[in-house]
Image (cartoon, rainbow, N blue to C red):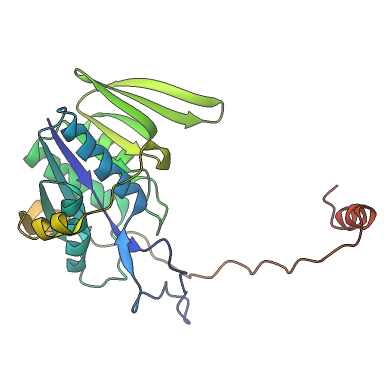
Length: 252
């Protein structure tokens, strides 16, 4: 079985995001970029499936700017076999919308014929949480979202996921699209020897036009603002004063 894993280049989760002065978006100048953490978990899970003998090949794909090569090389260094980069934008500030990404991924799935697509449940930059579900709909495949545990059993995938009432376990027919949550695994660090080996692994470069997909945005970002600053706290001298302050604030 072949496993396809889409990965996205995003601002590193340790970086404090700054909004541009004109409110047109976030400032990406001299900002550290890395693989979306949820996608990193997807790559790790795909590699574990291969190590367990349940997958033959792990293919990673990224859709965006040329700089996404770095993200793909990281996935290759973790243990993926080969990579596909679809250059769909020249400007790092242009975010490819989920439906467009899903259409490109569908074309790649038609070409590669994987038995499983493993996606991060969402990207930490736009929090859309839509690409995996859209791809499933376009392919007519089953889907399982927010996986915190998963296992392959023959031609089915068994997935446990958190819901409001606790844990839910479902069984879906393969081929399938699974989106993963943070609790699924702990991604490995790429070792230096594997980083060197990754430079020799195949990385094919394509364009959105190669797959006949129009990447013109359908959405327009009107304004971006930083969240309101948290109000300063106060110190109280006793429990009575604390209760009084909470009552004033309407908290009790």
